[in-house]
Amino acid sequence: KKVRQEVDCDETPSDGCSAFPDKLTYFAVGEPLAALFQVYNQSNPIEGRPTLASPAEWKKWSVKECHQMCLMTPSCVAGNVIGMVNSSVYASTCNLKSSVAKVELSKGGDAAFLMSGFVFSSYFKTHQEKIKFNVANMKIA
Image (cartoon, rainbow, N blue to C red; front, side, top):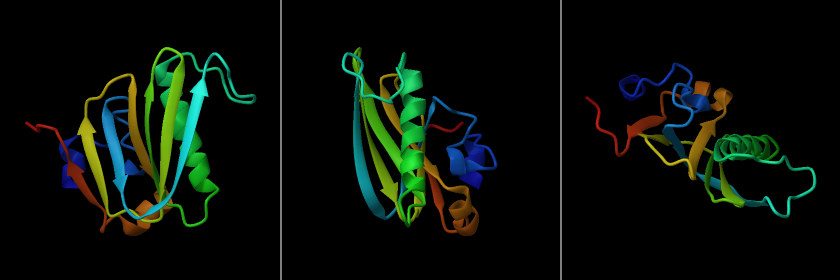
């Protein structure tokens, strides 16, 4: 809890510390369950997928898709989305977790790069005393 307070994270960090939606890297470290890879090509869109106009929109969509995949996967309690975007292609990997031992937090980032995660609130509430939070690459004044 002290580390979360030092980086000004909210009291419900299972959703990725909502005070920093675009500036905080929230990365769940735990037992791997599955990895899913997605590519979105604007010049040849996949039927049923939204038209993504910006890197910010792509980031929200990728995290939402990973969250949905975790909901549909037995034993999944958390996930991370790692990806990149350029002018016409968005790609991301969704890494699902069956447990979480630690969460790495880091401020900063680039609009073209995505590294975001989540922990389901029910799992977090049950295991929050065991989950360690670490601040990486961040100078805290």
